[in-house]
Length: 262
Image (cartoon, rainbow, N blue to C red):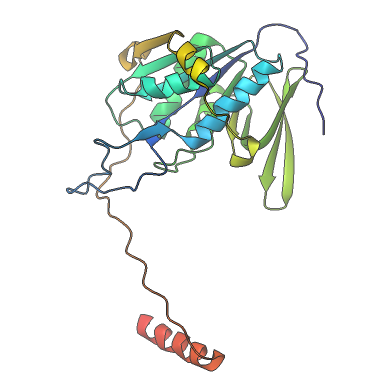
């Protein structure tokens, strides 16, 4: 389905994109010696891959003339400014860092984003469907619930026309197409797009774009943890496989293994 991408009212359309700083997906994860979490000291960090897709989609909407401004927001310590600069180099216009050293869980993140939405009044909020560090897949849905906005999760295609977002999402039975009245919350899947490579001129330009640092206390929201991590352990090493000479030998081995398990 092709959509003529023209906003009905011809007015400004602001897009808010949330980005998270995570351990680079190519890094081998190590567990802390005290088993309280994963080791992040002196580890390469990067933007969450699903959030890269969210930024890319927002930039494409702006390049089509649909969006007029893209604001990226991140929650965390000072180092998150690097992640915001990456988003600015991709084509976002300005950044907001909600600064905190606290461990921010999904509901707290959604509550913080709700406060930012009230300040910025975007017509569309785009997030990655999940972060690769905790794989919670909760923040987008919680944010939509807090705002009372329609939501389109796991978007593999997005079109904007006549004050509506047309979201195609993959489901078990094939494709589902949603028509959402703006403002709305969208979460991105891998098939939505392929993020662009950063050019040197755009990286340089990003250094001149504004980033506002906003202490989380100024938002007046509750960010206390609702979950307690008792222990983090690495998965057991996978056992080596064995070869069998025949189907009969395979069946016998499966029977023997089943007896051991019971």
